[in-house]
Length: 167
Image 1 (cartoon, helix red, strand yellow):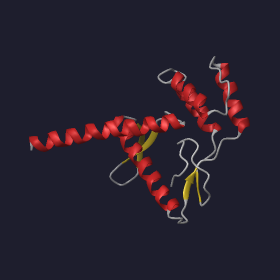
Image 2 (image 1 turned 45 degrees about the vertical axis):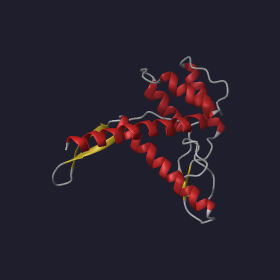
Image 3 (image 1 turned 180 degrees about the horizontal axis):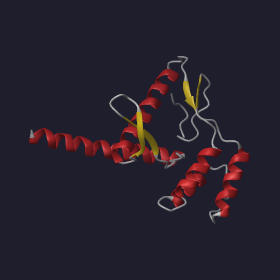
Image 4 (image 1 turned 90 degrees about the vertical axis):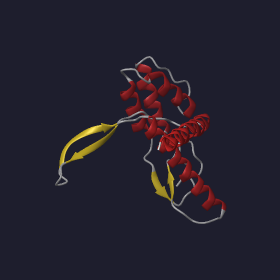
């Protein structure tokens, strides 16, 4: 049993390293990592809602998310290369007026954005506020500035994920 535990530990260590490489690759492409807690409902034994809590955003969740995104991109790329029609998960480029309003909001907090259309400057803002009391407000304001992701047969890409082929 101890042997298997060591094997599992080694596998998880390699998975964490790979997930970090994949995430860094997407960051270099312009990934917008919004840090917002996800609410989860609590149920009793009769499946009635009895409460709510925020799900943890820990390393294991981020690893799984990274592998899911990578798998979705691989499937989408395979289908696109085979010239097969499929539904994509698209996230269009945000309305410049909403991004300008976001830049004005962050500017009122002392965070200047030179080019509010630049996903890389938006990344910088998210990094600047990480761990700060203003982080939730800034992340939420940026989320409200973005368009909603939808399913479509059109090849529009996914803005927030910085992915050109995603399903």
